[in-house]
Image (cartoon, rainbow, N blue to C red; front, side, top):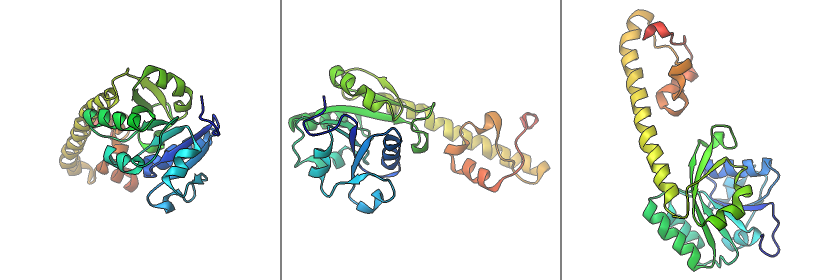
Length: 234
């Protein structure tokens, strides 16, 4: 249930980097009242959210607090002097599983509930069909917040271990990052070979474009244009 004096469709977002800003936009598009706080207040410009002057004001505005920070040490610093009684902290920041468990204990020692999250999407993909977020933490807390988390992305609940979301998040990165490295290597091979008979390297399309938007080389080729790679190039 929402804390006394807060609305069921209210959420506070702390941290307004690219992901945090998109979280705000996504919640606002879903009809939520969003309060924000960031160390650099100007990052809230143009988001249409209610700007809290202090962290305490941001925490007081909503029962649900969604954090998008660089790491868990930032959460400790920001929330260290705030009473979190009646609040649910959902930390979508990246860190180690062990550090996540320590962060969960930190929040509970200050009276709050805690869920960890690992976002498997680029900011612009939130609320899209390919986006999903790993969550872990107490089952009752997750079930109570499930409907408030759905607007961001499909949810994948991994159980009560606070560190589980980061375990799976890092496991997926261990799969994904070598894929990007292999994609870059494949393009380097094509660079050396295709230029000899086409004069320039084509822009990837079709199956070759699976990871193009995630690699510097792929983004550059999409900007500069060129002929699509045809299957005969393989």
